[in-house]
Image (cartoon, rainbow, N blue to C red; front, side):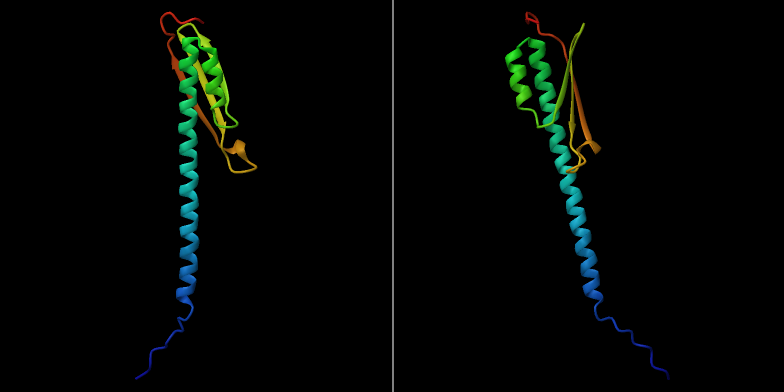
Length: 118
């Protein structure tokens, strides 16, 4: 009878642990990045809705306050239409040094309130 060849498996656990650790770190970074984008999108949508609401009311002071509360780098465009006010917001949110790679966009349309001064 021949003896089966015995393979040396020393170090296999170390290699598997290293690959597993790298995979966990990458998944955690991707999850964190997704959460970051999600929260920035929510902040942008809040800002756009608030600016649209205050613009429809004709409250310029509240519009200015809402603009200052916007996340840094937010570009807001306010368009007065025949049926109301439309506000579009853009927020560059890419990785450091490449902020223009990911641009979040939100838009709100609001009818003017009765009696509002515009």
